[in-house]
Length: 212
Picture 1 (cartoon, rainbow, N blue to C red):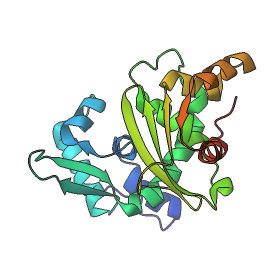
Picture 2 (cartoon, rainbow, N blue to C red):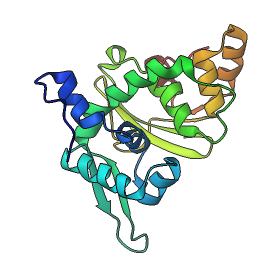
Picture 3 (cartoon, helix red, strand yellow):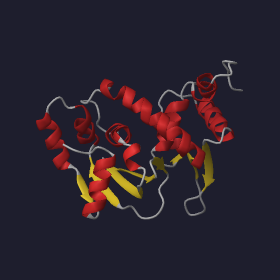
């Protein structure tokens, strides 16, 4: 059962759902793409298995995530954000990422592609500048693939082939955001690789503020 602040206030009502321990981190993981239960356990060390199951069940009841049973030969259950989850949770995660980005230890990013995705791409998303953009993108960051879309100023689940495929390291993406010198930012930007038409690449760089 949800704990509640019992206040008829949008912040309190939102925290009734999102304020439970581990909930935002579970949503963070699913924002990076569909994940198995075992994937979530591996990425959330310290969470009890019964607590993870309870949080997933609650988020599914709240309509923020959905569970899909994949057919053989894969035959596994995966969890992912629902359409409602994408619409409501993506802006929240982006806001929290912006709040926390200057607290990141840039020297401790090995094996953390999701951190690169959130801080390097999502925190830089310019919703107002993307109002006329409808495109799917793929980011390959340190061996993990993230697929997502922009739909008239909102982050959305992927739809169709990506207009741009970007290859990067988490370290370079973070460096572009937080490095204290222009020289370091430019060096990191030059290591990013983009595959797409010149117009599509320029548009992606603009709406995610991927510049030197």
